[in-house]
Image 1 (cartoon, helix red, strand yellow):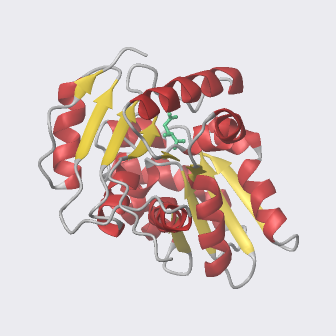
Image 2: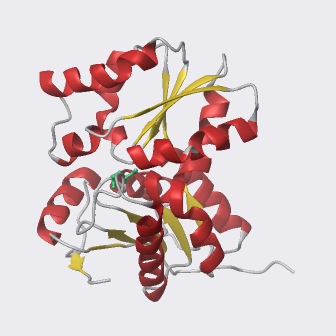
Image 3: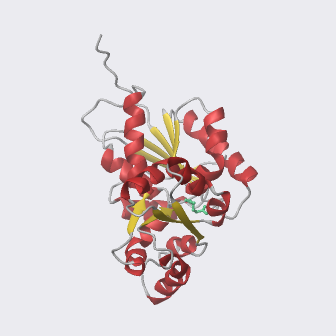
Length: 270
Ligand code: DGL
């Protein structure tokens, strides 16, 4: 029997703040008819310098909130939460959960020729070792060079995406990575794709940058279709954003970054 599926519920997406909008943009492009409900935990950002216990607690609270808004699956659009809370989420949440790390790793494995892969991310993401473990699980011949780049998030939050100061900081962090003969670099933090032009310039065109936002949009499409959760409409899906603080600032950035009108961003107390 050919069952007709049309699940109009939204995809729940979260990040510690603004950075997850890179994932929302990729999802809107790949799955334009799906609705999205997003939560940016702007009151508690950054997650990158917090403990695993706290990151798990925040992530579980947010997943509960998104499910209360009807989320049919959860996309963890935060590398730090994906590195430290994905298992806890998968265990306690009743809908499918996907994190950025697995998708980024699969994309990096497809891209690398010499099996030397670099990963950059927050202190919590890099010190968790999750990227390294996930890469080596795919192929134990892979050589991984990783580097935490804690100043990249504030640069992006401040909108310092270009200019000599940003270039100097990016160069300082990535200089050691250049000596590791990597041919692929995973941007293991949702903020970093916004620094892509400057990172590409410093790493040169010999290195392919893996933006996990695009990779996770593809994985999300597969999960929806494999679990009969996809919408079957020809109209554009809606986007509703919630934050835990400063909605006006988020709204302004989100409108500019996504290039679309979005309904008023609402504040939620978790
Ligand atoms: N969203 C976080 C990530 O992708 C970066 C910002 C933070 O430290 O919270 O790792």
